[in-house]
Amino acid sequence: VKPLTDPQLKLHHIGYVVSDIEKAAAGFAGSVGARWDGKIVSDPLQGARVSFLKMGPQDAQIELVEPDSPGAPTARFLRERGAGLHHLCYEVRDLTATLQEMRDAGSLLAKPPKPAAAFGGRKIAWLLTPEKLLLELLETEANL
Amino acid sequence: VKPLTDPQLKLHHIGYVVSDIEKAAAGFAGSVGARWDGKIVSDPLQGARVSFLKMGPQDAQIELVEPDSPGAPTARFLRERGAGLHHLCYEVRDLTATLQEMRDAGSLLAKPPKPAAAFGGRKIAWLLTPEKLLLELLETEANL
Image 1: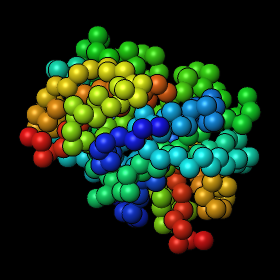
Image 2: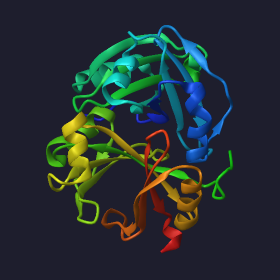
Image 3: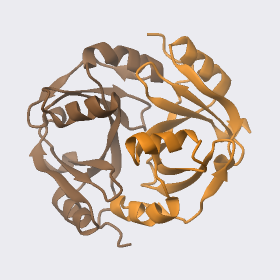
């Protein structure tokens, strides 16, 4: 197995699909001891509304994802499986290079890099690994 | 929302169900830039075989989980959804107290504390939150 050039992949958040963030967020936060600031961001480029639950200071956040239309990718997920764990998001220093390396290692590009409203315009891209793990890659702040 | 007494929940691993660890592990590790030591642990009390992929030094590991029989809980998961993200595991200092608080906050006890072969006998327990997140709680090493 060829290691990735960037050894600094860092887990940024765990994506969890829900049908209604407003209804789910406070209860979700309470059930796992997280903090929720009430902020919800719409991202039409991703077909979603998202909000973040803050866990411990060292820990990855939990991202609640709500489809913004019946045609959104997460709407299909909800219909087929119901609410649940959806993806892992890792921060990377060089998004372009890491995408290429992961594709070389067999992952499919599910969505090319686009600026993400939830991350102040930092770019994200989506990959599906050979074992069907949906990965979101987020460029580190330093790349802005 | 009543905060948990133990603010030190720490994400230990993300559980991912596969049908065959031997077949999946090396490729999975390669696709996400993880290290795999080849060690697989059988845990009859959990009805599973498990193995860990090491990500960055600060990051949660990915636990591959394989059902050890057609009647295991993860066998049903595989039949219904295929391989995929399955649970989040947090370390807690006081397993009994945190379990009680989470149940008071609406989570269901899915499996009471038992020693886990994969963690040197440290106890684990399982909860299902009101939003259907499957949580594993692992007592910290200090409690041994």
